Figure: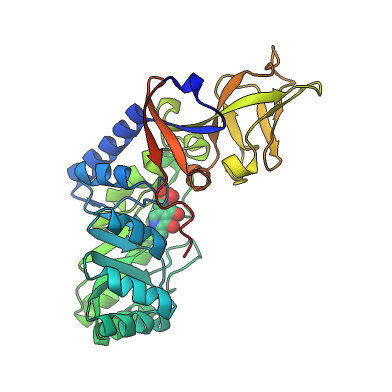
Amino acid sequence: VTVQELDTPAVLVDLDALDRNIDRMARYCRERGLQLRPHTKTHKNAGIAQQQIDAGACGITVAKTGEAEVMAAAGIGDIMIAYPIATPSKAERVAELARSCRIRVSLDSEAAAECLSIAASKAGTEIGVLVEIDVGFGRCGVASPGESLALARRIRALQGLRFDGLMFYPGQIRKPSNEQTPMIEEVNRLLRSHYQVFADAGIGISTVSGGSTPTAFRSHEFEGVTEIRPGMYAFLDRNMLSIGVGEPADCAVSVLVTVVSNAVSGRAMVDGGSKTFSSDSALAPLTGFGSVLEAPEAELMGFSEEHGHLDVSGCARSPQVGERLRIIPNHVCATMNLHDRVWGHRGGVVERELTVDARGKLR
Ligand SMILES: Cc1ncc(COP(=O)(O)O)c(C=O)c1O
């Protein structure tokens, strides 16, 4: 079967590009002495997670407890939940997982640490904990070295928990690699201030977990980092291409759609809308919702739930009803989560169906 025979809309995964992306990141980490712990929220597929481990990753990252459960059931033995666990019901599930897996959680409050400790003590398991520090993204993470040290001390005193180190996510760095230097320096200034208080207190930090896809190949410049958690690098998307994370040929995912209407002049409708792509926005200065590979002058300017609105007024030839187009989505992680199955192909020949195993695992 070729991808042209698939019913649409269909998410296509170029397995050659995926293999190259996985191998390139694994090689970079090996050469720089960094552990690689890919964030699997991007693909949510246990087979790709195993491929990343086979290529050299030390384990995986997830955001949700439900994602961790899916990956553990598939045999992944080392999982970091890079998300604070703050309720007893989730803490109990995490403590259960720790019976069969090496589990770590990042968090930034005593309340979350205490919640995990109660569950781990009850289950008789041990959970590794990383203190999340804010390095400028302004989402989670304690704000000061005094707070990270105080929280680490508290974790060390709590039963069932093991203090493993620090975690950060430099999500504010979404620029081309050659423009990142001042932001990396600012992150390093903050990292050093945390390292200093731990050194003064004589508390060892065995792991510093950082990393993102835009900064991935500069990870060795972040001081003290021992492991990185890029996710999107495996697939890439329109936003990542726009900041030069890869070449168009490195983007492993596109969405195959069919033109279903061109009744309005200058417009064409395709059979994928917000329920196919997600409505995630483009990184400025880009606008719109995707790039059309077969018609670069067409602009995917809007969505209804099941319609993609293409402005084709700039195209020399308007797409005809029944024509198929491949569109690179703005944000691949959000797109993947909308699909049960996607199609892996090599050179347009379908090789296998991939299930999005941890799809919709929000709890
Ligand atoms: C905590 C955390 N770690 C790692 C990642 C992966 O980074 P990226 O999306 O740049 O691949 C994310 C992404 O949102 C994240 O939130």
